[in-house]
Amino acid sequence: MKLSLLASYSSLATIASANPAGCDFSLVGFGKDNPIGPTTGGKGGPTVTVDTVDALKSAVADDTPRIVYAKGTFNLTGRLSIGSNKSLIGAGKGANILQSGITVKDKTNVIIRNLAIRKILDNDGITIQNTTRVWVDHNEFSSDLSNGPDFYDGQCDIVRASDWITVSWNYFHDHWKSSLVGNSDALRDVDTGHLHITYHHNYWRNEGTRGPAGRFGHQHIFNNLYEDFLYQAIHSRSDNQVLVEGNVFRGKTREALSTYGLVIPEDSPNTSPDGDFEIDGFANLGAKNDWGSARINITQVGNFTRVPYKYKLTPLKKVEDVVKAGAGLNRIW
Ligand SMILES: *[C@@H]1O[C@H](CO)[C@@H](O)[C@H](O)[C@H]1NC(C)=O
Ligand SMILES: *[C@@H]1O[C@H](CO)[C@@H](O)[C@H](O)[C@H]1NC(C)=O
Ligand SMILES: *[C@@H]1O[C@H](CO)[C@@H](O)[C@H](O)[C@H]1NC(C)=O
Ligand SMILES: *[C@@H]1O[C@H](CO)[C@@H](O)[C@H](O)[C@H]1NC(C)=O
Ligand SMILES: *[C@@H]1O[C@H](CO)[C@@H](O)[C@H](O)[C@H]1NC(C)=O
Image (cartoon, rainbow, N blue to C red; front, side):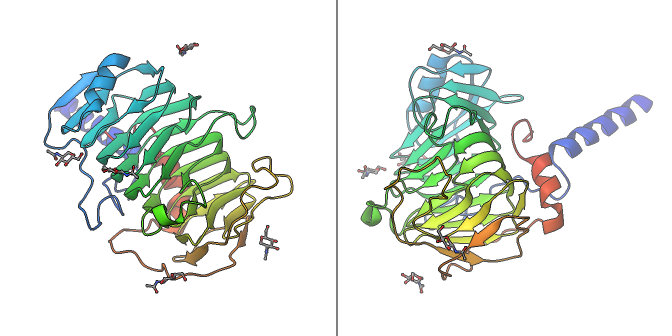
């Protein structure tokens, strides 16, 4: 009797610490509710566990539904290409992806969870290109700021008409360029009408720019925590639209939200003198945000004021605690 009581107390404690009160860790947003169907990843396929680079590469390569648990550290020597209908999930406390990052290109229906993606040298941590239905959830992305803004590339970049994506509960920290949506102002014809992305309950800490920076698309950005975001946290340009609500900004965060096309803070190391010269984007404010001491600079208010899905906002006062407790690795069990 006593033993079983103890057992149930400890399992309650585990659940409480892994899943803070009020958190719903299920898929929410454009990755779920969209015209082409929810992201299901490898659902319906077999589950396999891999612990070598070669086994990981081949387990995710084809388009057959498969749930792949990655166990341990994967020091990649080239991009890891993920095929359609895959769930790639770090086992246990999370798997480490080092050296080379992940590419999802010309695919559909991919889930990526519980991976620690650190100091990727060959391009972005994750590049999602010409791909629909993706859920990037409960990962940790980090490198350092000491090598300058262009030593590493993006943490999670979403480009070339990709669509219907949710980026949730990730911990992005110690990095210059976080999440770029639409990678050139010359790609208007390719990108316009796409790039619908939901960013929610992510924790950004000690980052330079792009949390996210969007072009030509629509991003719903809610209940994220930004701490010491050094330049623009949310940046909307080239006719992009953002709906920004229930976010919290803390610490040295300078500019929480900007729609200005030409954004070169005088002391920003992140742009060439002739770079980023493009037209403004749009910003729409939904539920109240806590801007902290950060500025906002909205030059154009747009018409992306509602989303075609149900979602539950975390009360603003709870966002900081809930995001810190819920984002990142080792939370989803
Ligand atoms: C990963 O591999 C590279 C060589 O490709 C090596 O320089 C580096 O030390 C390795 N990192 C770890 C953590 O094993
Ligand atoms: C897997 O993905 C492809 C697209 O690459 C799709 O056409 C196919 O129907 C999917 N297969 C299953 C079994 O869901
Ligand atoms: C995008 O991916 C689809 C396959 O899903 C492919 O047919 C198409 O050619 C790709 N488009 C571009 C511009 O690469
Ligand atoms: C908005 O940002 C632009 C570019 O940095 C700047 O020229 C403009 O003065 C800013 N407006 C406000 C109201 O801060
Ligand atoms: C929303 O605003 C954009 C930019 O002004 C415009 O192109 C688009 O047609 C508008 N959409 C609707 C549904 O009014």
